[in-house]
Image (cartoon, rainbow, N blue to C red):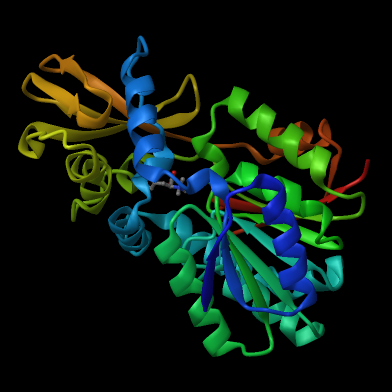
Length: 345
Ligand code: AVJ
């Protein structure tokens, strides 16, 4: 698969459009990810200057982090991926009949393994299936794209190496389309961030287009907490990789042996909260910006939140942005929900 870099914002849209017309299989790089080391350094600095120090979770997904996340997905305690996959397997056919032929655009596509069930269903019913995975990990994107093309030579794949923000402008080229947002990635947003996100998506999507949203549902706390504290320690390795990445890319020289993974459910806020606790005082040094931050013993840096949802509330919320729920699918235990919406106005 070819890989091309584009710096200008407008350039991306035009190039995307041209790639679609010419039926190319290609990955386009958005300009926003052009200076990754600098964005990472700036983000860490900003996060460490906050009252409750918090780091942006999207930087968990470098090549190593994306690989560890895939490993999390197959841990016995991490029911999310398995459950959502089963729902997709069961309902992909019905979903594809409901929406008709459309361009599939996936936000945060990762390995695209789950999405393959959807692609397969669309291929069974329609010709000229086109898939646009969007991800911040170039490695994950290229591997996923190659695997799909190898398995399904008739599907066109135009990937975007970029952020969600980069993808919004592309939604005007793709109608009829279905935006696919799986894995309960929505749960990583605060309510405020979520609001801005739906406003943007709703603004850019065309009337009649679809949105397929996967959300993890509120359930027994012990099940939730086990999912983020797996016995094999893969989740801990995943979150600690944030600091390993800082050592690699920012020259932070942190001692990872004195950093501990902590994850618990906050019932009041209906969310998992994931921290890295410093079991000894350490300084975080960011070479390129000439900044040093002192972290006290026992201090916890928030690295991620993962909100858990109730289906009726999600539907009511999305309605307020012009998305009509047309189909709701869950598993037998009601642990995970997949909702198909149509953009009404
Ligand atoms: C990728 C956001 C769906 O919140 O469950 C898994 C990330 N973090 N284990 C989640 C994650 C720790 C995951 N999402």
